[in-house]
Image (tube, rainbow, N blue to C red; front, side, top):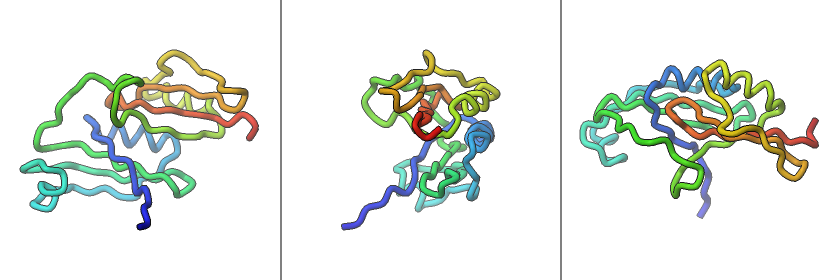
Length: 145
């Protein structure tokens, strides 16, 4: 059996704000679509499923995010995920300039949770809250400078 990671799907409260955040970080919008119908109801187990989606790709062509904003049923607000909670909780990106990436995030009102850490003289990294409370990890490899 061959397996390949296709994308990471993230429900957001404001699709346009999420697209702006991730494209400012360097991702590219591959496409947008409105989805609904029996196939969508069956696939995600929600009757009357109706959402706006956008597919974004990292500049290296390897990573993809599928962002979706539910039109129906109404999206359910929950507390933001904490780093130690079980389940899907963050999306991570390597960047060549962490300070530049943090400046981009700050323009969207997104700041490190605590600060920037250095891991074994190999990476500078941080977690921040992106749009809709998404945990985003940004990491810069130090020996790549």
